[in-house]
Image (tube, rainbow, N blue to C red; front, side, top):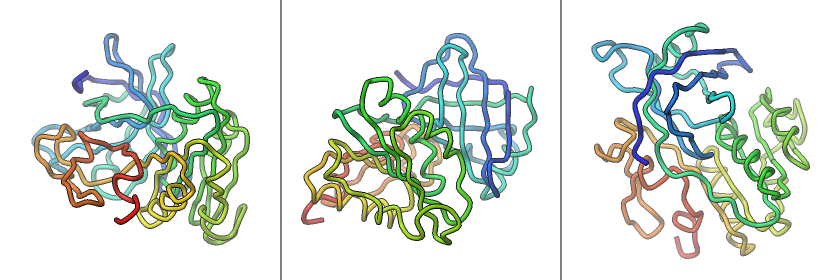
Length: 255
């Protein structure tokens, strides 16, 4: 289904950690239901106001009964600062859901996230658990973890790694990953982390999916602003062809 434009209402917008916010919005009747891994283009300013572009943010949680969608985002610039200033009752323009979501596969799975890359993995973990897939989570942060308890509520085991060692394992999420224990590995986070985790999983012969991040203008595949190249050099649009890809597309043997 093509992405839709709609006006949502902000229900909550709270700080979860330094520069990390959780925004929950109520969707209007008739708005399409998002899948884990999809994203919306968010905007709370007029067409003639700065910044020029809407902000692409992945679905963190979706409640079909209450018709709410939540976004976990990091404040980095003018657009996300404006989002962080929204109060309950404010209007929020959404375009989406856009992109391809995660496929639910296997009897056992692990979601591997780094920093704000953990955002799209919560709804995925919920969907996997609902489908009867035994799911673990490995979550990495620089120092202060966030939203870990939400993962604990739906996952069998949750392990945390921090760069500083303030919580959990001091080191990288890949130190904790044993891909051969799972049928499927799902990854989202910084490129260096994602590449290492994907290569580990692919090397173990495990089905691997990655959620890529890129700067976007339209979010619909028209402007080609988020084009990147696969391991074989073919151009793909993160917004239209992704953001979820099979790991081998970028990190397979020979790439």
